[in-house]
Image 1: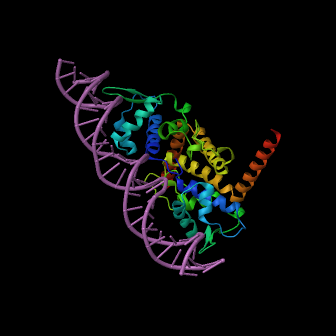
Image 2: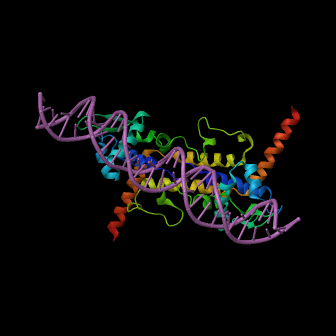
Image 3: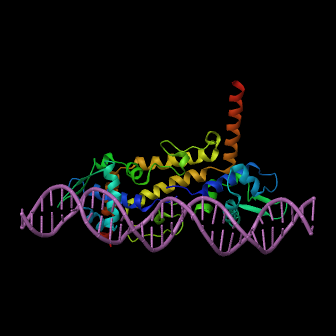
Length: 150
Length: 150
DNA sequence: CAAATCCCGACTACTTTAATAAGATATAAA
DNA sequence: TTTATATCTTATTAAAGTAGTCGGGATTTG
């Protein structure tokens, strides 16, 4: 039940782009440095995000990437589904065309996995990149306040 | 974000034991046949469950396995944690001694994974093996009723 | 043109998964 | 006491997935 680095790194990159939304194209190199991820590897991940329309690329010098839409209109669920595939703890409860076995109709373990799938999806679909940016700003403000008092 | 066959097969086996709770030891062979799992492979999985005390074994002819406690007192979370390890979409939010990175305090992706972890745990910890058995009986009753009407 | 940057395919070391195999040990029943 | 039935243990393995690395090509700015 682990997320791969695709999902972890990819979400970090998208969060970074959300933090810099409105500042023009952001280079992969700068994202990789800030988020401490291999640039070449990140290239692969963002390629998928671009093909899915979640980011737009600007080629050439001073180029980079821009979020495909406003941070408030992009959920973590959108991002994770591109990077990790449909949300499903097991294949027989995939969100789209699940590979069902013959016992699917009366399989009770399957209903368990459906509940798990739905609870994961609910969390991921309820958080936008904007929420993350706000959360981050709040945490930073808290830290400053704490620093001030000591 | 996929469960391995350990979790899937293992839960099926535990469900099978719950269905036959009170009937004495159930052989692995019969479980493997009913649940359509390789017997040898299941042996490995149940070995871990035995060491964790979730099942008791009875050796020799007419031997087999018995649930370590009543189906109503064993949750799916108990089973999955033994088979798949602590519930955590990423290592830095493991339920016990997480491997934290230096940025853990202010990492916002981390708080996302915490929410995911908690929502998964809540589902798994709220369903007992007894619930699954009841659910299964209900489904069978529904099927019979349906068969009667056509 | 040169530098910056995105784009693309191939390659690889490593780990995990999902078994399979072979035999040792224990017990009930004939 | 023998035999059949089971659990228990260790080792091996083929295939797949993970997490990158590497090299070069295309595009745009200055």
